[in-house]
Length: 120
Image (cartoon, rainbow, N blue to C red; front, side, top):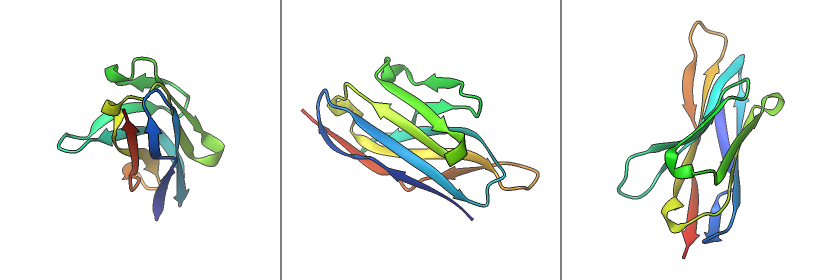
């Protein structure tokens, strides 16, 4: 089985920073895309950022240069460095990974979510 375990969420004041981590473990042959989504109360889950195995990145428009996504392939881990946080960034942040466990096709796996709360 594959598990994604997130860490690094918490409470921060507006203008502050947080670093989220997400480590994948289990039977893993390869990991393609990894990334982060978030879901605020009463809103749909939305993509925050993603990174390919070779390091190509993409960000949502609302990031506006404030967040940086990275990954360590040797550790099967993806990171999200967030700075200049504002109350609108308050949400549960979920990591995901597209993982091949040795079968013909890859599947999407999700972490359990980590709460990020930004106070004004």
